[in-house]
Length: 62
Image 1: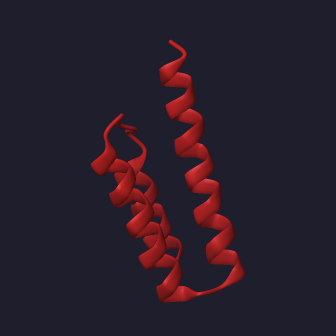
Image 2: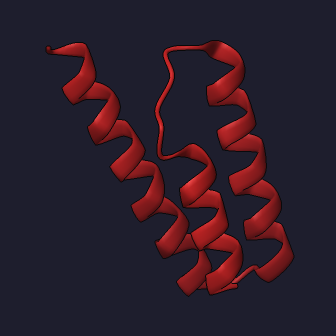
Image 3: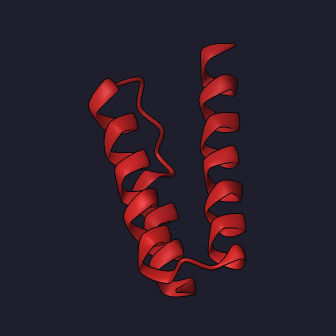
């Protein structure tokens, strides 16, 4: 689980202002969550999504 979430983070850490990027991000997060279906997995994925959103908001404000 941890390696899947790490790979997910690495794949999406370069945030793009693109609808396809965000759709893929959400779809892949959902697939990982469905694979493990635990509270820990959900929490880690939400943390990654929060970080991606934070980076996106920072990029927009520049």
